[in-house]
Length: 79
Image 1 (tube, one colour):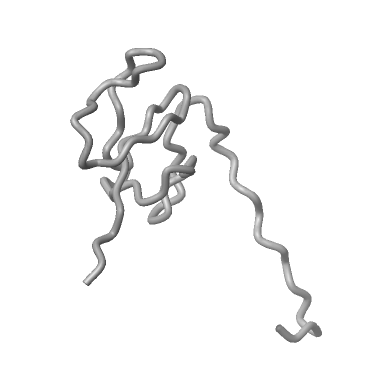
Image 2 (cartoon, one colour):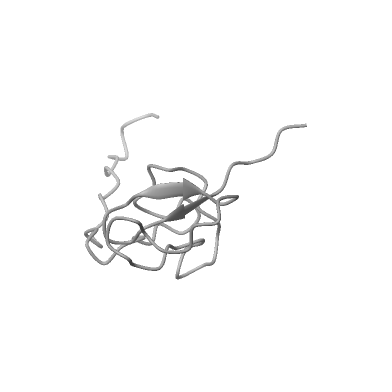
């Protein structure tokens, strides 16, 4: 049985460390590491995450809050 990997993430420099590590603060800038999304509390499952995979919330105030718009389909188009 494989476990889902989880990470802590620096909201300033995006440095990620495994949740199993004993690090609570970023070694680069001293900021408290995030363990979960500040909006929905979902865990961070990718060391490359910039947005929450559950709700889309930015994991940093430096990350733009704007989201890409979904393309609109015309009535005569088939998906």
